[in-house]
Image 1 (tube, one colour):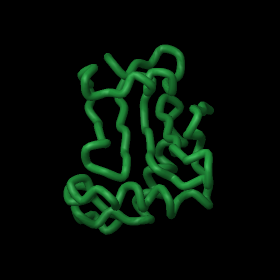
Image 2 (tube, helix red, strand yellow):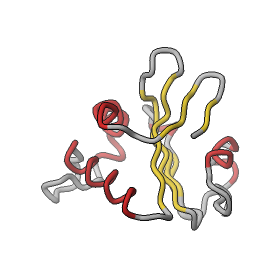
Image 3 (spheres, helix red, strand yellow):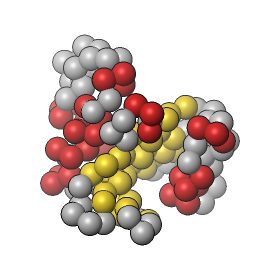
Image 4 (tube, helix red, strand yellow):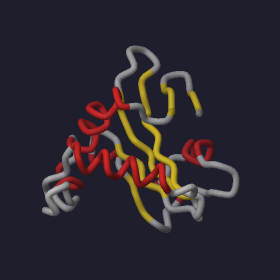
Length: 124
């Protein structure tokens, strides 16, 4: 899908799910308010991640990709976006996470625009 000197950005495969879940769970500020498969906030789990990935596949305008280190293949982030301009980027540290429907340029890494399909923007 996309590559940099250090990262491969690609679609998620079954073998990647544990790594993606570790990224989500590494940010307690996000998991405290994120619903899990049992319907309770603060209990995000593999079942809900699998559901989120499945829902992304069903929506032609939504895309989810993992960010993997080229050296070793470790998952270090997740990007989820819609062609309408909404995006969410998850990383292992709270300071690296941003997600908003109307992002501000200072909060959005410019490199995200290169990950977007034609017509989508990280700065809508």
